[in-house]
Image (cartoon, rainbow, N blue to C red; front, side, top):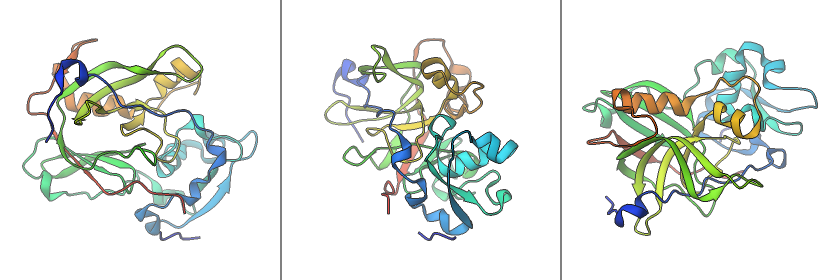
Length: 266
């Protein structure tokens, strides 16, 4: 079926107070088929519920990454009972992106990020041309990701939360490959960083990207990590400025435009 569906820093300490990243929620309670994205109207898809013993790999072979990106979900959250959007023609979601190939506000910027909350996707632009794009997990209801025009000001490859821990474990929540884009008047910092993607907005305002290596380390899954979008974006931004373990101030960091609103289940 076809579904149509500027900021003052409040002291140095506050700069590093991260936003809550959300918890690992059982996605079997929610059908991803009910999460509406504007781009759904461009793909003919069917709703399919995952059965016991099935996985993205077993169902879609080498094309499992395309289906994962289309659903904005990672392998750890594809469990029995989860309902996914499955393209009628798998080739329709090859290299899937719902973002424009050319973005005029980015034409005079060597690096520029566009985050579309309505689509739950981020695009990396160079002089207006889209170089690559990635699915995201943004703020859940009541903890919206701020919209507007920002700029990346800090990078920290090994960032960890100072407030929150991994669920049921006394370990700081990992915020790998973190890129700071906003600190609000209350001193809450908003980052783009690695995390899990459940297939719908689940954070407390940060922007999450695939990091299966981190998930393997902390959660034991997946067995063979492949998706490392957080690392790719971080290296595209930081380049030769990388200093292992150190926070890196980004002078004249890339602009970040955040548009749209998080989708709500139908």
